Length: 128
Image 1 (cartoon, rainbow, N blue to C red):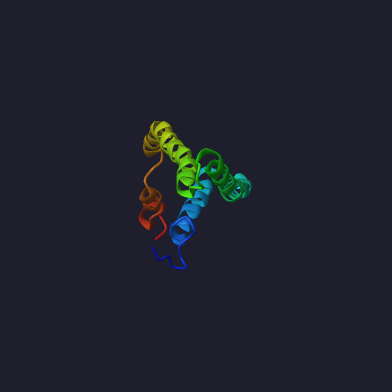
Image 2 (cartoon, rainbow, N blue to C red; image 1 turned 90 degrees about the horizontal axis):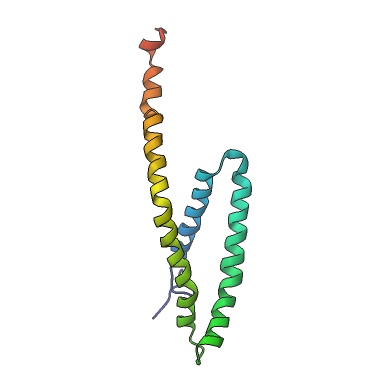
């Protein structure tokens, strides 16, 4: 398989990896209050760097050398990535009901975006 310069060593596209990292930063900006966004962003970058770049290759090499007779990196990479994929699905399924309840609660309590602008129209304020 001929890999272009934009593909990473794992076979994935570098643009896909950057989109995944950007979605994590967006999530941090949406979930945390203003006063904690910088700290949360820094912790995200720290943990992604330590776990992704530090522990990932180490775990792949340890599993490849100890579990498989031949140094089979493909199987070792699957063994390292599979628990994370299972955890993502489990966390999504566990958090979905709470998320839906929050969205429904906010839809009942927060007026639509256009309602505030309608109240500020010239006819209602008496400024003509």
